[in-house]
Length: 154
Image 1 (spheres, one colour):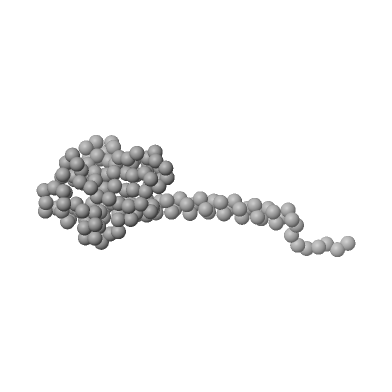
Image 2: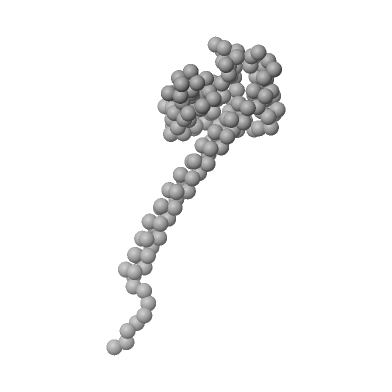
């Protein structure tokens, strides 16, 4: 009797199952890496915005001169964030010596992340001696419709 060489159907199914498990793991890792990259980009953008506003308006006693188009053009940034939403700058209505950076267009999980993140240079973080992250926002809207507010100034 001759013995045939080759792969059986069971062996092929085993190989395909192993490849499927590896692929699922790789997709999860890629998704996590992309989420981490977007969060880092937003953090870097907010730092750049705050630094730019302080440099441009540092000679004034307050931030009532904030204008989104002018500020973003002057610091060489686009107001669009990595989540497809925008960044906005507004003067705090209760105190013109403070300004608010808004991050729009966030999913619920990313909104919660940014609300709980320590924004060490923000008013809320400094006033709470580091106990509070310094950001506010309601993260209960549908995905892509949540906004986080971070207040800076004196």
